[in-house]
Amino acid sequence: MSNRLPVDRVVDEAGNASWKQSPGGLVTALEPVMRAADGAWVGWAGQADLELEPFDNAGIRIVPVPLSEADLEEYYEGFSNDTLWPLYHDVIAQPGYHRVWWERYVQVNRRFADATARVSAPGATVWVQDYQLQLVPAMLRERRPDLLIGFFNHIPFPAYGIFSQLPWRGQIIDGLLGADVVGFQRVADAGNFSRAVRRLRGYTTKTPYIEVPGTDAVPARRVIAKAFPISIDVAGFQELAESPEVQARARQIRADLGDPETIMLGVDRLDYTKGIGHRLKAFGELLAEGRLKVEDVTLVQVATPSRERVESYRQLRDEIELTVGRINGDYGTISHQAISYLHHGFPREEMAALYLAADVMLVTALRDGMNLVAKEYVAARSDEDGVLILSEFTGASDELRAALLVNPHDIDGVKDAILRAIEMPRQERRKRMRSLRRRVAENDVTHWSDSFLATLRNTRGPGGWAGSV
Ligand code: ADQ
Figure 1 (cartoon, protein in one colour):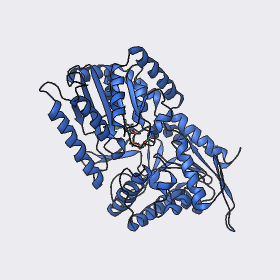
Figure 2: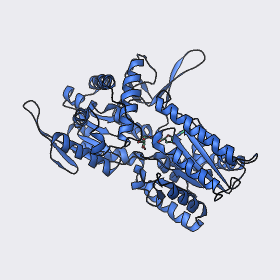
Figure 3: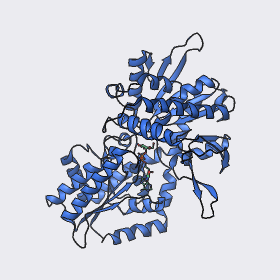
Figure 4: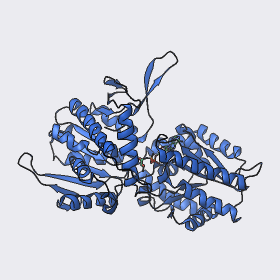
């Protein structure tokens, strides 16, 4: 179950609607599991006020949950993206606390729980994805105590001092504790959650267990809260990057940019958590100080359109585009642009070609659950070249220790890392990239989903209902 279904509705010129599977890693990892288990995916189809009957797509039962325009405003753009998102990312932006948003969040979570309760076989395994649906585990358990319930949070879980701002903090904790396994990206996130449980509910915790006491009506339970760092389809991405078409396209990109000595790349959803402004500031200062020359270095910044109906995102776009315009105006020449800025989505092939063309990859997020872009860059580089500059505030930095780790708030530190990356000898680049590639190869997205589901299954002991997964 996820807020958004893994399929997009496409309507052709004649008005005929069909469905196209979205290319995300989550779908790739879960598709074989879902097929083998006769699985259903419950979620929203991506269009407001669309009432659809369940249907089959590529061997998976699709169960659409309708959302109205008001649901989208209050549950999705409001509570999910303007309350929980900034709060869980260490209040980089000010979260809005509005009771009507909260009430709508409860209502929509109930709708998801009802839809899932209806389609789940006796003893089925249900895996709930992400922060939009944190109340679902408890709602589902109440309706269907026979189910085995897992929850995975794709974004960080904040320290208690921050989480405690939330007026509905207790309800969120109770909602999540309805799951048998609550998964997080980092060990620190799981720790923050357990601490919040102790502080708010006083339950006993002993990593990774949380003891939830029983009542007259329901027995005591043991919940597991643990880190399961997500990854990508490593082999698939590597294969794509090794294809002759993608390799040729990478060479073409370099030529089109005027064959500069160094190409730096940033790829992010246009989100205030990604630290795009910090990165631009560092690059702009290096140009201003003459430590970098526009003839030698180009920064390609892909800023993927995101949440454009939320005001803080509109403002961010204006700020970033103003900064890009200033830097290009101040330092560009007729033949050399400092920053090549792209505000649109690309096919996976083009992303792979960009990674191959980039000498230096810049990931400077201020807070990020994992950051899959960092892992994709590494997976693409079978040539064992390229330097990854990685923020220590990403989940990926727990695994990718051989990157040049930076604190993105420390602009001088980021500038030094950029210069170090540009000047790094080939031997050191190869050594670091090899080490990064070993780590990424160890944990691909199938390993992630297998280990989560195995942990979930084991909570029932051998021969339990979940043996059918
Ligand atoms: P995101 O915040 O979206 O994910 P990230 O993990 O980097 O961040 O994933 C972005 C994905 O979108 C990557 O696969 C990337 O290739 C793709 N993408 C980005 N820009 C694109 C473009 N212009 N065209 C095509 N594809 C593009 C959230 C959390 C992360 C966590 C993931 C997964 O915020 O911390 O890693 O979920 O759990």
